[in-house]
Image (cartoon, rainbow, N blue to C red; front, side, top):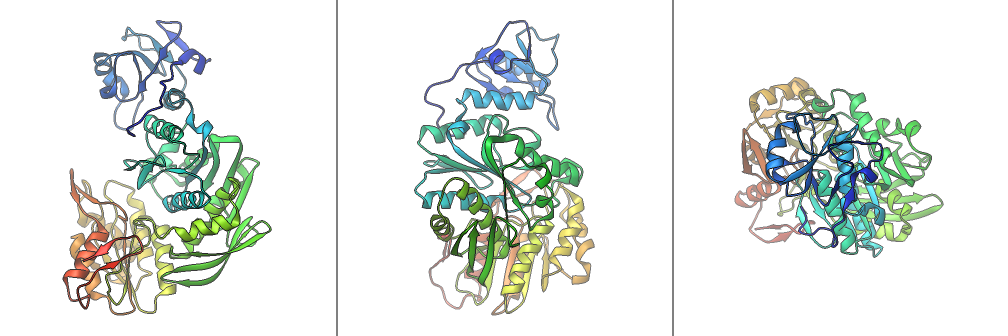
Length: 506
């Protein structure tokens, strides 16, 4: 939660907010505070009774009442509870709308871009923020790595915050004079209607490939969750779709009237022609309608040029000039854990990336293979208690590297050896090296690398913990890479070097 709330608390009448709702035990409910967590209830608050994936909110009503809740938001009247109840068709949606109203509907006073997609959400939102800031616009950010209101920044807890936290951060942006914001919208958040009541000026669907099937059940259900982003567009809002991705392109027929496409395809409204590529970044010609501008970026790989195009489409909609778009892209040196270069003076390249899907891993490896004169070595694993069906697919993608090291990611309650066997089913032909201790696996890959090679450490990216069973242990891939490189003979002599992200190797 941000340490600030709207300066003047807003009282909300539920009958006015939900005119079709019915009321039990009262004619109306007026409140200054609502929550879906019984432990957060306070005197005179509204408790939203939500049925979750693992627990029913009805179980927590006694605690909510004990802590002072005086009304419930429910989908069915509860005869055994003797306090006022507001009955709505969809509690999740109603609760999100109530949170937005209690924060004085801050999205109405922001230029807000929402970005969804299987991969690239984080980089795209960071690019949007960088471009808007280059244009002199104070800009907030809500996503996988951090939450920022333009003044204060905190580490993120969820890719998309819960409804109350979201409303509070957006309210804090308005209170601090932030005019624009970019936010990541996960498929879970969209399916759970966390952002109902938060209207967008631009909605990006960057790509739709396989992920989270353990939650959604199928590709079609996963795709439908992504399409929900269009439900939150303002009347003059813009849909932004990627012509290079079949999943995003398939959304064209279901998109609102105002659509801008992007891609390397010249038929796209926003397109790019690559002029130069290297492991230090890319140079490309950006076309925005009738405008052309040369752009340089330190972000590595064509998938990152695609992210640049998505950000360019959004910020052009916000009125930013092509010159400032190019400047904003050039200003962003790197995104933590997204093809993040680690340079400690070693004679080969090392990148840490969050890639934890087949598509993301394949794209990263394709980029490195095309730009590396030596071998590409891939270190990766797969998360436990998550979609098992994508594991052999990730193995197949990893097999495109010249050498593969399978290790643990966040095994959670699963046996890491079982996870590795699932991965091996897809890449057995590549004869991968299996080392379930992640630090040892990273060290093995770094010691195997020769001058001119590239090592990709994939899966955890910016994360600083490894979840093993119920334990959360400190583990940072970039930190481990730096430690291994500087404590072995890989680096010729000790020295200080600053990486593109401002990280120091000692």
